[in-house]
Length: 117
Length: 151
Image (cartoon, rainbow over all chains, first blue to last red; front, side, top):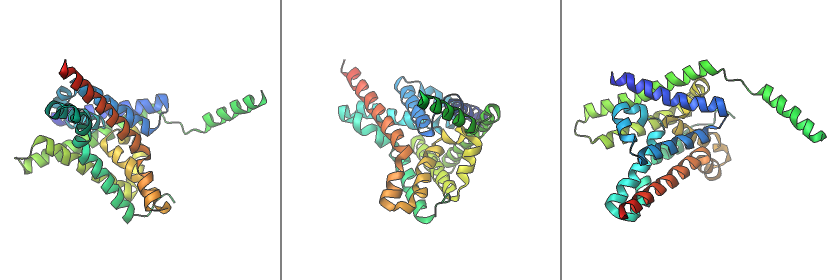
C-alpha cells in the first residue's frame, strides 16, 4: 500500500513538471529551480513533514525533497546555533547529495568519452 | 517594417519546426517513469533500514539519494539516461536523478574542452542555478526563523 502511494504521488509530481514543460516550454534548469523553491517554501511553512510522512519517497526523491532539506537544515541550525545557522545549515544538510553528484560526474567524465561528439 | 515581417516569418518557421510533444502520451510517460524512480528510491530506503536496523532515518535517506545519484550518473555515462529523458520528459528531470544527470551530462559532453574549462565549468550550467536559488532561499528562510525567534 505504501508503495502505491509512493508511485502515485511521485508520478504526479513528475507529471506536474511535464505539464510545465508542455504549457510554458521552460527549460529543465528552470523546472529544477521551480521545484527546489517549492520544496523550500513547503518546508518553511511546515507542510513538508506531514507530506513526507505520508508519501515518503514520492516527495523525497523529486527535487522538492532537496529544497526541503535545504530549508530544514537552515531552520534546524538557526534553532541550535543562532544566526550563523542560517548560513551553515542549508548546505550542511544537503552536502551529501551535492558532493556525490559532483564526485560521480567528475569520475565518470574521466572514464567515459562523450557520446554525442 | 520589412525586418518585422521577416521576423514574423522566421517565428512561424520555428514554430512549425519545433518537435511537437504530443501532450497525453508524454504526460502518461512522465507519470509512470517518475513514479517508478520514486519507487526505486523507496525500495533502496526500505532495504537499507532492513539490513541496518540501527541506521537513523536521516542517514538512510542520505544514502538513498546518493545511491540514486550514482545510478543516474552511471546511466548518463552509458548514454542510457538521455534516452529515458527523451521518452519521459519531466519524469526524468524532476527526480533527484535528473539533477544528477544535469551535472554528469555536460561534464562528460564537454570533456574535450579540457578538465578545468570543460568538465569543471560546464558541470554547473544547470545545477549552478539550482544550487544558487536553493541556497539563497534557504538562507532567507533561516533569517526569517531567526528574526521570528527573537520576537
